[in-house]
Image (cartoon, rainbow, N blue to C red; front, side, top):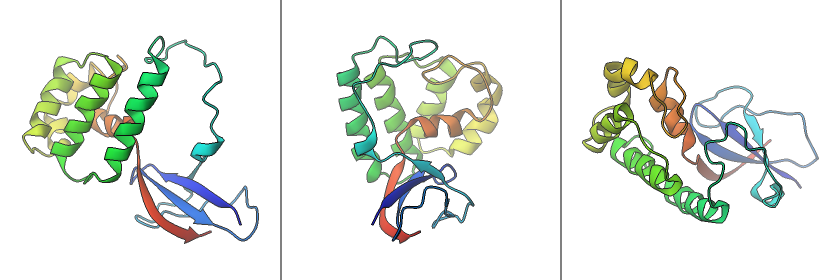
Length: 166
């Protein structure tokens, strides 16, 4: 019986679904927030780590891939026990991600992380620093809106340990 993994971008969480038959088309709703049509994800065992990737605009190009994989695995393990509603924990993960990649954090994002470490609400920080954050992006150098929400997506998603029926 196959198990499929699906990602909910609203919850930033991966859910596992068991089915009695091979089902490559069905997309379940999120068991936590009821978002319709979750994104199907490849299971960890199905990802090839030995293939080469194009280096174009990849902010991680040229990094020690083995070191980065170890750092991301450690962050993913830590993220599983993280309270996603605690801005201090999210700020700590952001700092660790920046340290693991060796990429600089701009002054606006540094201010946002510092304030999250003090326990301030990320949405309030984004509202107050919006224009400053629009000029920079954590670890990628791009501009754009919803900086802190996009930043959260750069952290590994949490994994729901429940096995749901597809």
